[in-house]
Image 1 (cartoon, rainbow, N blue to C red):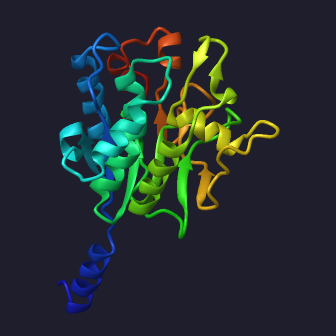
Image 2 (cartoon, rainbow, N blue to C red):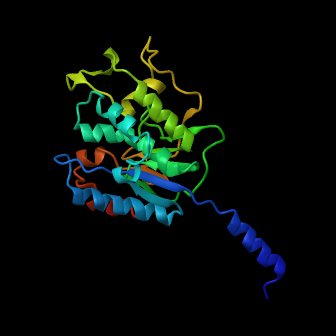
Length: 248
């Protein structure tokens, strides 16, 4: 027989459950990939995060275009120099603004849609911090999963928008100037000598929690970013191989 104490404890435990939105941003880029392959990959992303207890939301341009600051950020981000199609690079920046809009004042996780969840339960960011989740190796910073509060995402979007290109943004391999959110984050976390373009905000922190495929730990980590190494290993398109490589 269930006593009133047990009923109360059960209710109390349920009330403590955390449901946090996890967002990914998608904009079709003709010529870069097929729309069908990306939605198949997004389906894997959604199922893995939902299974772990998160609320997965796919954000697209129509979700944010009515915001009064949308036009400003579009103008800023489409003017950035890039070696990639403009829609792709601008989307890398716009997703930070999108996370701010969709967070509605709360904490959210922003991820690439090739970051698959293998058991990371919903949680809030550390007090006062925005966390970029990335394990080492590699001994750098990589984009994949970012946990923060709404204001953090807006502040990052503002920082990216105000960053003017300089000689350190020249990509010698591509032979052109290039900026995206990752290139700016690398300069913040690992600035070359004398680089004072944009000091890293004190509240922006790198934390373990996401493993880049196929570095050590990808078979056991709770978040796995199935990045470009999948192509190098012949696992392309990704959606055909991820669940065979490691089911969730």
